[in-house]
Length: 500
Image (cartoon, rainbow, N blue to C red; front, side, top):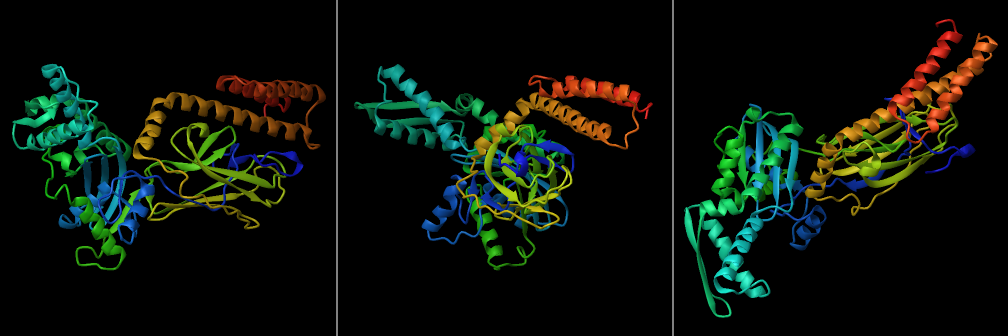
């Protein structure tokens, strides 16, 4: 915490809610918002920080990074374009990652409403489950464990992958590997039903993110106009039936090639960015969303959200904060991302200081804090003192704030799990701030020469004020404790001033 003139700490308060905040502000900080799996100008499912360098190594000019489901939505939308507004769910289950996005498409405008997924779920997991099944069967039949033989495991895995693909079109197949281990051949039948049973938990697990994007976007299932399948693993019949059942038996859209949709959509976006438009792409506009809330820390470790999660980007959001100490001339702004009420449970992205604030009574300074996110997810944060126009500047390197979609989903899940604890924390924080502000007001009122109050009444108020200040120092005081102390102090003030 930065010090200010007079030894006061650099506390920050929201001028919108008049809450104190133990945060200070950052100036212009620059970072990339963490995203889920992405496609550059080709289908790429690695983490964001690898996308741009990988594209460059491949000899591509990386213009922008977009989510895979968003790229697939572009591929879908070009051939389904109409002036009618549509809510489209993109279900993207590939070899190693899983993403779901809900978009609102109107003409050429693609607005992402919500995203969810799992970067560690895909066809490879289904292969591995089948591999484990057959490893056990081989051991049971032959009393041999192939786990320590990398070549044998690799050959059996390849056979399992072929069987998985075959079971998408037939109900039974045979897994055969000649001389799998120590000269022993392996042959076993597998039915589609058994394959589905082996992977039942993983298959059903893909429905949770679907429900989540509907909840986050506040769009009910019956208001989704189209469900588009992307990724090779969506060819699995059980996957298709689970999705259809979730949407009440709806027919799924299989009009686009699940293997090529992402690359096709990314290429179309690249064409638009380079001005190579056609009648189909002339009015294309892509609006993505911020995957996590962004904001600053306030007094009491409270997270002051400036950009809520799932806000469409590009965006420019400003929130006004103020000082909480008299003559405060310096404020430090820690920038966080996350969904929890307390900053300690969120992720720190960086911080910066704003100095040279004109000395004023607390609550008078106006500190304009702006979060600006461009189409590439580049975040710029600035804090400006309104009277002097003074700003601070800092750059946060791209390595900061990079989260996988799994980490993002975990942060969101934690926020839901601890929602009651967060509400209790907020209630306590608000009650404490209200009492603290009221004590400050009472101190100013009774010490003013203009106060028309008799000595005995003033003593009574001072006694209640002292008790209230003691409550503020109690570490485990509850919200009710603060409210009761505030009520007693208010009653003493009403009595002292004749009910006014």
